[in-house]
Structure formats: structure tokens, C-alpha cells
Length: 206
Image 1 (cartoon, rainbow, N blue to C red):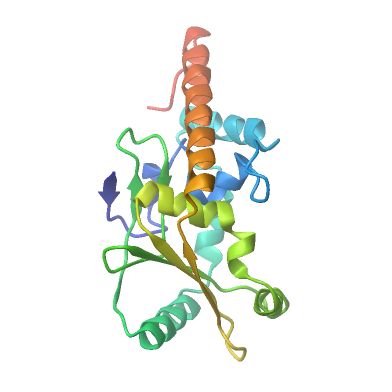
Image 2: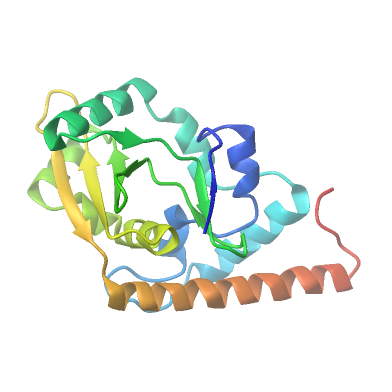
């Protein structure tokens, strides 16, 4: 496990996740409900190969990160730290030892926990209050726990004017086993595709 403390959203952070699968997109590798392979894996593979060749991120998570309200997230962190009576720690990206998969949790909590924050529109937040924000982001949350080797993640949906939706999610070892297999399989296909592109005379970005 390799920790890189680049500011999330920075060029260095974007470069560190360039051309590799990351937890925010693990739902493209495996289905949240069944744990079976996702039909989105091949298109996602093509995006990662394109990034590798262009040297430019095509990941929607990068652009959406820039659009997210920094002030709103700061409010959410302040609420969480007061509610849980803890301090949190910012982190850039955490990579597997082979640097071929990674995750960018919003915050680290103590030695064992993570915090993942969503600041959705009011109607989406109401859905989380009636259901669970963790259900919609199962692949991302379990993927973060897999990459970071941590025990739990507090999932927080925060929308000013409405009650926060805060759920603790423990590691699901069975799902993580299936997920890690899917990530390994994807990485193997990704490396094979890179090798094929090189064989055909195409090279990665300098």
C-alpha cells in the first residue's frame, strides 16, 4: 500500500490515478448487488488505455471533483468531527503496491476508519434519508476499504437545511474477495491491452 499526499483535484493527484482503475469506478468492474462482473468493464478498459496513451485523464470523477462544493464539504467534515468527537485526516490517493489500482477517500479516521462524503441535490439526499447512501456506493466504499486495508467507512450525505444521513459500513470480506478478483482481472486485461498497443507501434504518452 502506497500513500501519496497530493491534494485531491490537483494535477499531481490526477496524474497518480491516470490510466488505472480507482475505487470511484469499481462499479464498472463488478455489480453492487450480485458481485458479478459488470458489462461496463470493457468500455472502462478502453478509457484507461486512452488515458495511458494520451497522458490526460478522461475520468469523470476528476471533473466532477472540481465541480463539488468545497465549502459544503468543509461543513460536512465539521459536522462529522463534532458528531463523532474525532479528528479526521486529509489524504491524496492510496495505491496498491503495484501502483495499478487506487482509491481516494475523503478523509482518514483514526487507524481503522474512513469518511466518504456526498453533497447531493436535496431530492437525492431525501432518497438517502429514506434509504441508505451506502447502498448506492457499495462498490466505491468496499473498494476503498480493500485498497486502504481499513476496517470501516462512515458514509455521510450532507445537504444544508436537511438532516445529515450518516451510516457506518463495515468491511464485507466476501464482497471484497469478489471485488479484488475483478480488479486483478481488469488489471491483467489492461496490461495485455497496453502490450498489444505497443506491439502495434502505439506508445504511452511521454
